[in-house]
Length: 413
Image (cartoon, rainbow, N blue to C red; front, side, top):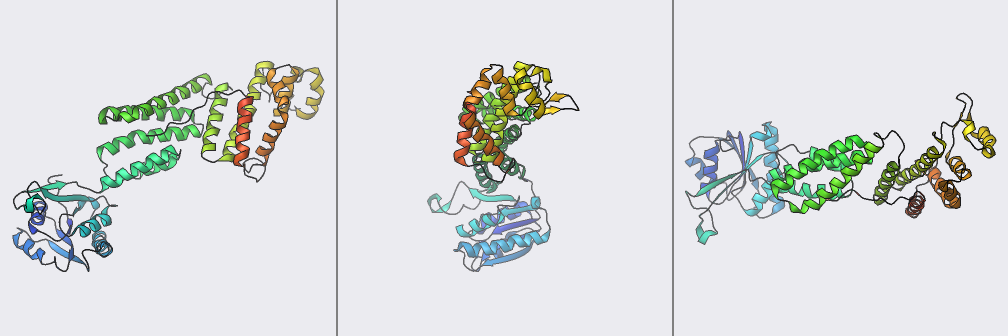
């Protein structure tokens, strides 16, 4: 970057001319655009007398160099000139060395959203006992002093908030929207956040294999970040990520990538529902909870009957239920029975299975669950599930299916 030669330099004008002369002489731009006050325009005469070349020059004048709004309006006119020039952003340098503090602030504010190259001329020796302007001959160029680093840090803080709120799509969108070079530490931070957010997003959408691949990638990047930047505060977060990965890997292995029904799927459904409740997405949560109840019955039915409850031969049904089930659930084309939820648990009760017995002991509460689910706009009705109802539904099903394994996605410190 030391040899960087911009086509345009956008500069705040004021104060001692020597730092500005050094900056211009070193960069030799084709054009200068000055943010100036009426009083500071004269300084440009001193600058041009000292230059070894003659760049084109434009001025935008602020009516009051001590009012931020007035300075910002003039600074925006400077950036509009840059935009009209059609010169690529990577050929623009912003030098905020000169001018009043208000002028430099306005210049930074007007350019912060653009991937320009930024420069500041400082030095280790100043007049006025070290607090004045840099002494002639002691100027030092600080290239890359971009306010974008501060902006990127604020975006990083916003990403943390969104990640901890499970708004993973927004996290990914913010990270992928950066179109300029990031400070190394923030770049490395995003390098583990983006795949982790993508992994948890896939997990919430039940794309478990894709989720595991992303979490593995994010974990490797997280380990690199901790070792490279000494972020010990993330070690507990890394342990929790490992716990999630272990559960996900076991879920995939034991269900053969979600093919056979398994209690692990019920655990996953209820944990998914718990996250939806925390996000106040009650209808989404109700659909997952109801599916967990339904799946529990299907698993227990298969344990007893040796077949799925939607592929039952009539002779499998106990004699006292067989005629009733044939009338209600028989598929003559396939010559099988397809049992709904209540019939599934009735079969289990007649077989003296404890799940069937417990189902009918809790029949009133379970009917309330079925009604809330059917009334939901995501099922057959138009009523939203209320907060009070969803907690009752969750507790009833959690206790009925005897689920005890609960965990949340980890939050960033």
